[in-house]
Image 1 (cartoon, one colour):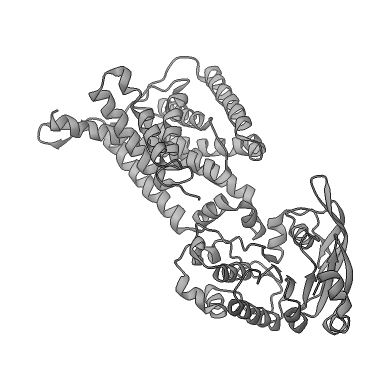
Image 2 (image 1 turned 180 degrees about the vertical axis):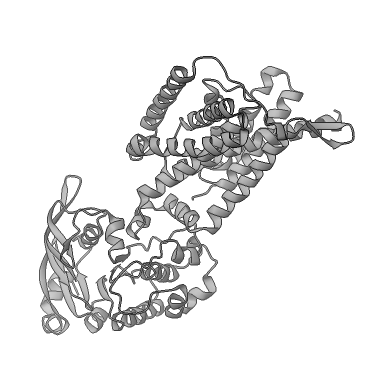
Length: 235
Length: 290
């Protein structure tokens, strides 16, 4: 579904990605692991077209989207729950969900996402519908960010630090929902620090170090190589 | 002071206020959403007035003038956005001021070439000519009442658009985080063009309604644009509600200042008002985006 091939990305003069390489297949949940500052978020920005790669290419179902504008990439079925959540602060929860909702994506096996389905997934939001984005707790904001991404009916959902800075109970709730989404057949690319949970629910993992992939494999392989985790993640 | 005079001047202030609101609504949206300082907003007001004056002279119909001048001004605004202003969003405010000041000169010269240097006068449409007696013995020009009515109706419509529609949500969302709006599948460039067109339509409408009460002349945009900037700064940049309240405040303060104070002081009233509001609330009365 998504193929990232040898991309090199720069912020101004400084190079961040040095030939990132990985793929997400249909229905898979794939994680990007690595310490802070290794280029995971930059990778996401390059996929979304927010900071396009200068070399290499990003393919979505075989179509080159490397230099497509972000809105086109989103319209072709990629949706992002970004780092720091970035919920629209002056919009209510309901408006956050509705404002950018879209149904134009083909190939979604399940029914289209609606406000009601998002509320079923995150029941807390039902009581917060008319609160402004700025009035929500971190966990609620994260739920809105995920719900907002789902309302565009993506084929590939990208989650950047979906559980960072959240209380343990809220984290568990988010993980439960992500597991549901995975079970529904949605392809997911996830960046997170919770390696143990990811090893349970994600299919494959890529470890990122200084702008390139240094290790990749399934959860069992990762579990069998604790030295990899020690070396690259310090856990 | 005679209460009757206060009442009449209150209506005058209100009428100036709604004209300012029509200008300020577009300017504050463009400033708030696109972070663009558009000095040439007054030029769209002038173009609206000239286009309407021309249509009215040719056809004798004010209604036709309104129906043609508003879409033409909207299209002109969108054309300016696509060809020139789009390149300025990423520049700093000084560049924007310089470039849009150049647009003012361009449009003033264009008007001189096409319409000549003399002022035009639009006739008050027959339907709205004459006076309406508000109280026994007190009459007020009907056309000015119409301006107040149209202005308030547009304010209500705008409020509904911004607070209740998807377009309004995207305008508010784009004002705080345009990148995210784009990453969720919205064509921001198109959104900006639409917002700019909306602002141009309102400026055109203000120009058309100003036609019959002021003279249609080169430079008419500059005299209103300064007041308009005062309004959006007082109201809080990007806030439609702030623009409405502040335009009423400025309209009333300016009108009563001219009645009650000696001329030298009267022209300072709104600036004193602005300074006072900014001392009290540096972000304006209704800061739209924290």
